[in-house]
Image (cartoon, rainbow, N blue to C red; front, top):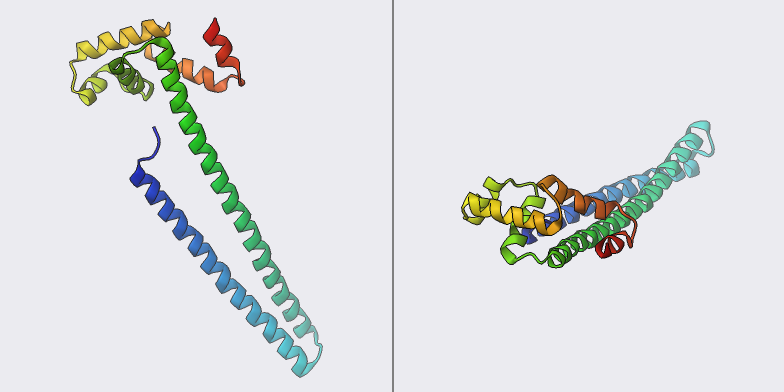
Length: 179
């Protein structure tokens, strides 16, 4: 259901490159801002206050402030992205656990559970048979057993059971399991 370990490693490397790129950009901007602030202060010391130097100084300090604010905001965004990614990983694991619990509750055999999981992923009987190296008739019989044990009549109804579980408030599926 989730990313493979290789996909996770690739995503981590991509995020690390993005963080380094953002950090390098902030460093370059900070150097530029410090240069312009120093230039404005040098001009001020050399020529005194003029409108041109006042505007140049104001712009230089605004650039420096923008770098600081942008860096802080970027750091907050990166932190939030990491938090959401962790929450998604937990939710993904929770869904897998929920599916496994439902399969146990229904008393599915190992083969039926595998077929049901492929059905939840959207595969039809022919695709499931090809993926499992099984006969189409066997898969259709297993799907019928899964539907009967789950109390549904079709693949769409099977999927909708899990969608309903996701949409119900906490505790809702426990009430349904007892009814």
